[in-house]
Structure formats: structure tokens, C-alpha cells
Amino acid sequence: MSYIEAILALFAIVDPIGNIPIFLNVAEHIPNGQSQKAFNTAVTVGVIILISFAFAGNVILENIFHIQLADLQLAGGILLLIIAIDHLIFGSLRRSIAVNGTMSPHEVGCVPLACPLLAGPGAMVTSLTTLESSGPTHAVVAIAVVFGMLWLIMRFIEPIHRFLGKLVCTVISKVMCLFIASIGIHMIMSGLMHYFGPPT
Picture 1 (tube, rainbow, N blue to C red):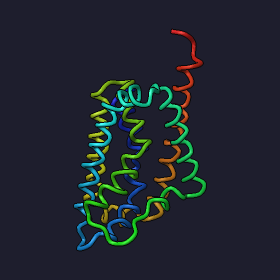
Picture 2: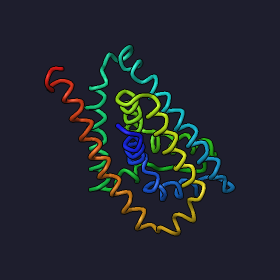
Picture 3: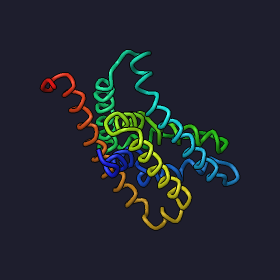
């Protein structure tokens, strides 16, 4: 997997453009217009979660849960496929991320923005599989580039949303779901090849 492929795979999972309406909706629940604090917290916590899981995830899987990367690829691939189909057909993925009441910017930045919206199961699996298949440099670069772009989008979120409009953001989100479904299929096939592929 090249650097571009690693970045695009993680970008499709995190879906910064498609999540713009969610960012704006969540910002409405933050007092005193401190949305940028929430966004900064979300980016920081999301990076920490993905890097931690990328480097320690395999050890945790083998020593605690006694499962292999192929098992995680199968489970993660199925999960990504379900998420993509659910959002494409029913549109319930975005509705499932809700914030009720008034919360502090750091609370909102951690949950739901950082996890599960940005650094959810799909992003964790993608980061781990990138590290395992291409090395730690690819995984770290992909996380840094995607979350760097994410920070810029959050920094200028209102002008971007006004420029693109709700319809364009929705269309981009749907297109990203097609990529997520494709990534899910690829992960499922990779996991199956571990068990049913030709001997090496």
C-alpha cells in the first residue's frame, strides 16, 4: 500500500467533508461559541486513539483477546460494509450521532466527535491494517495528513459549508460511503485469503 492509498483509505473512513453538517450541528450545543476548542480536542484525541491502536492494537488482540489480524480484518470489513449500506440506504449513520443538552467543548470534542465519529472502529481497523501491511511510517503519515486536513476543515468549517452547501456535502458523504464499502470488501477478502488462500 502506497502513501496515497493509505491516506485515501483513512480519509474515506473519517469522511471530513461528509461530516461537516454534523460538526456544525454539534457546535450549536457548545456554549459561548467555543466550537473551535471542541474541534481541537477532537483532532488531538482522535490522533492519540488511532496511533495508540495502530501500535498497540495487535499486541492487545493477540495477548488479551487471542485473535489474529485476519479476524479483525473480517470483522472490521463486515462492519464497514454494514455502516456504508446503512448510510447509503437509510441515512441513519448521521442521525445516530446526537448530542443532547449543553456540554463543555472538551466533552463534545471527546464524545461524540473524536470517538466514535472520527476515530471509530473503522478508522482503528484501517490504521492497524495499514501499519501491519505497509509499516508504521505509512500509518503515522496517513493519520497525520488526514487529521491535518480535518483540522483545516474544522478551522474554516462555516465558510466551507456555505460554499459547498448542504446538498454537495450530502452527495460527497454518499460517495465516500461507496469507498467505505469497497474498503470493507477488500478487508473481508484479505481476511478470507488468510484462511482459504493458497499456501505460501
